[in-house]
Length: 133
Image 1 (cartoon, rainbow, N blue to C red):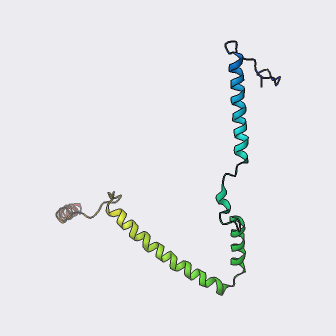
Image 2 (spheres, rainbow, N blue to C red; image 1 turned 60 degrees about the vertical axis):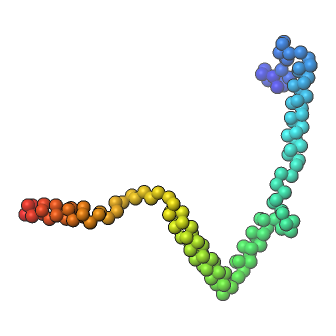
Image 3 (cartoon, rainbow, N blue to C red; image 1 turned 90 degrees about the horizontal axis):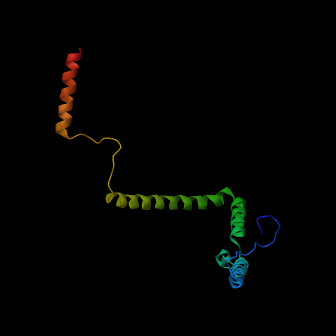
């Protein structure tokens, strides 16, 4: 499209030969053809990998079955979920303890003082308290 809004193709630059202009036009046409062809190609075949039911339909069916279950039926699955949550928490505790063993620990609160410093601070506090009275 031309800059003047007429819809006509821009005029070739004086330095460009007719062959160069045709070459650019054909490469542009090839690009447009490739874009069009790319849109027609199925890009995500994994969406229906098993070919029986789409994920959206599967989720809808599972939700309907869950809502249709009685409380007694749900208790069985809630117990399984609780057991699996405990297993997960144990594995995470083990994982984090192994991970923290090799990492540098930065304390945000001061830890306990060594006994000799602790005793010196207690003496200073007691000495200061006697003078304050």
